[in-house]
Image (cartoon, rainbow, N blue to C red):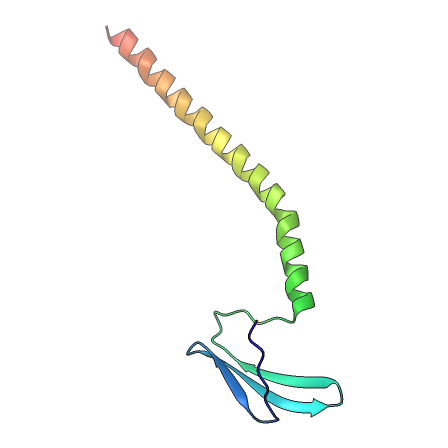
Length: 92
């Protein structure tokens, strides 16, 4: 972890696109201003963790849904294959 000292109205850059500015310091609280492109999500840690928990809860449901979809697709492909085989056998 990189630890930097900054004072009010000073900034740090992360890459070329993310700027973090010290907006205010009051006692043990520091207010930060973050400038970042819209495609880079910026969250407080507790919000980020809640999002990750929600994703983890949805993941098994999504996996099950995808597995059912894949199974249905394989069954449809197998039916098509069987129908082609039957048509070829009838043609002979």
